[in-house]
Image (cartoon, rainbow, N blue to C red; front, side):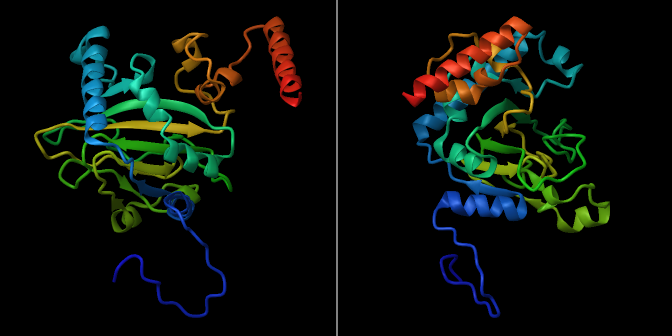
Length: 282
């Protein structure tokens, strides 16, 4: 039966209405904790992002002592905050469909909490994302409102063979980690096309699968949060005060919620905010 056909039902008097892809993704994330969303990138754009990713991986390893040195701290398969060095990753963080979904789930004030390149290594090599976790790790509570949202960008196709992400559907609604028997019965592997996003409530338990191919599987994980959750890396400090003058981009990157370093800085920040509010009213 085509997915566009009405679903048979009886005894139903109330149903959600999801008219757009954003509506459908938001509804699925609230219900199950995840959705796959098309990125609508052209081949040229994907090629540029792919090239930039590989260059950033090489630069990261060169700058931090090489693969073996990074392996000592289990960082050999990660690129931290690539947007700091390569603007094309800022464009990825500003993807309009992703931001629209995040704002529907989190509210109008969305903060880019972290952005990391992730490599699922080939030949069934173990890696640190291969164990079940939440992207708000060590937390055993549930919230009536999402606190953080993942947007996992698939730079390569996600398949069963190359270790596509596993999820435990609706586990963002449960405080405790499920039993092994339930996990084995209910876990679901998510296939996704190159250039798409797997978007999840960050409290959803998930893990990377085993990559049994001879090629690395690459992705960029971006998390967006409500503004009082601390960023993984202080992006305003890393980027510098003059990185951008665009107020919406500055807001997303955390320039408006940095912690004052002194009482004087706190007062100065208050003056700036009140002055901005007064200007907007005019």
